[in-house]
Length: 378
Image (tube, rainbow, N blue to C red):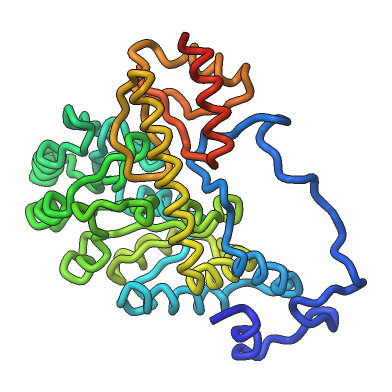
């Protein structure tokens, strides 16, 4: 449901006598500077953002939603949960919205880890869950990736089940980022389903599918359909990546109701703002934007890979909107040298100290990256 239809369906009053999508004084004021990177003239390839931005439908919905800013967003949260429930074939009460999937990850850690419950993660992987679990004084068990940079699900399973059999210190949570950040690698669908089948039901597993929409291989699939059979499974998604809404902050998870009740106990009311909600609703109605963004990302990524092949640099095969390049030397000074040339790239990952993480930007941005990369690496 678009914001206009939702507005009518809910019977919401019109703020200040202004219809949604109309201009109060004939023109929109320019209140903010134009969008730039962290510094002028810097190519930002550091945060896995979608350089193509939100769907035009999302931008239109936000414009029409300006007059809703005075209302709390709870009605629209319910509408988005219903839409996501239909999308994933689950009841809306099995969908929990968050202020980006970052809030969802924090709620996971708050609900399921403490000083007596471990968290098992890959190494390297996205650090947020481990950071939040550390605040709860949980022990963090890091399992190195396989030699081909996939999650070692066999060793993660052994660590989790070994802990869950302990009377004093059990695995409260297993975190699987799929595709994984920072390696952009996938955990194959059969390996994930086998992992879930063998995992102790007392251990909650979080599968983070932030980059789900970018994957093109048939060896991968979402595990959201498995939620119905696994009460200990939670799957996170975000509107930050393929939907281009990183600055708006809207994410969600799909899981069975008891898990949502536990996580919801740690959540503030109305944590997702009204602009993010109406933009998310509109984005779900624009699958063409998703397809276009995926193709642009894929085309540019293939071009970059071809250039790196010519230059003789190995890289981890990418299934996302970023990639890891093996520099064969310490990455720290290279990151600084690229920054001095106006190109921001990813941070250092201690488990892979010679690898450079680079977001796949537009064709023009990646040409600037390659120019700077050649200069720095010569």
